[in-house]
Image 1 (cartoon, helix red, strand yellow):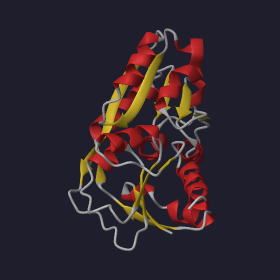
Image 2 (image 1 turned 60 degrees about the vertical axis):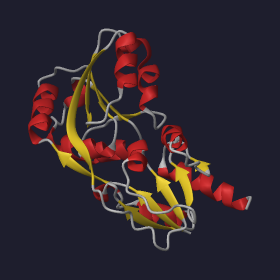
Image 3 (image 1 turned 180 degrees about the horizontal axis):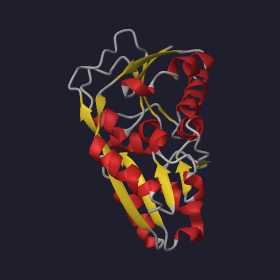
Image 4 (image 1 turned 30 degrees about the vertical axis):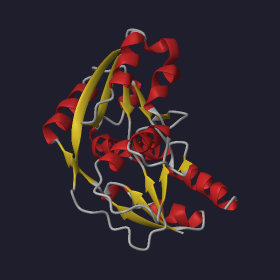
Amino acid sequence: MQIAITRLAEKGMKDQALCEKYGHSARIVSPLQAELRASLVQTFVLAANDGEFDAIFFTSAYPAKHIGMLLDRNITKKCRVIAIGPQTAKILHDQGIPAETLPTFYSRDFVPYLGEWIEGKRIGIPRADVPNPELIHAIEQAGGMAFEYRCYGLVPTGEMLDLDGAEVILFTSANSFSQANLPDLSQIIPIAIGDITAKRMQDAGVTPVVVGDGSLEGTLAALNEYLKTQ
């Protein structure tokens, strides 16, 4: 099946190979575009390299790609570096930073992953300008201190997504659904990468046929299991 995947254009390079592994083809459609904020990147990098954090949490691949290369190669001797998934961790590893990998694809599991260690620790979070009060609250409730650096914005393109020929549309984030300019979806299978995205879709009256585990590969595997029943 041809699957339209909502991605930032620069984040979808490996999606085709992964879709082919599961017997499908990919088309990247981009309802959002990233705008890097260079001054905030610089502020974060200076703070990190000066040892102001006990841990750094990369919540997606985009900041890892643009910030990892600027960090001190010995950063992990000063603080822990944690990536939200294997793709984000690989980007950091390729830049010489041996990051830990969160065992799930959800930021809500960051605090449980750190456990009691987080108490009294300063956590640097370079991320998109998208509110995540649950993460900040969880860090503070556990006795940690969260320092967010909203290093890039996600701006709607406003363009109607080109879904001609696509049989499935896979939404990879809640905002890539709610801020997309969508055509009629009545003849296409909507699926969600995880439960947060699924809830946003359901709240808008669109029921995802498949809900993944937060990863593209897990969602493709779930899609194939669903297709076996049809």
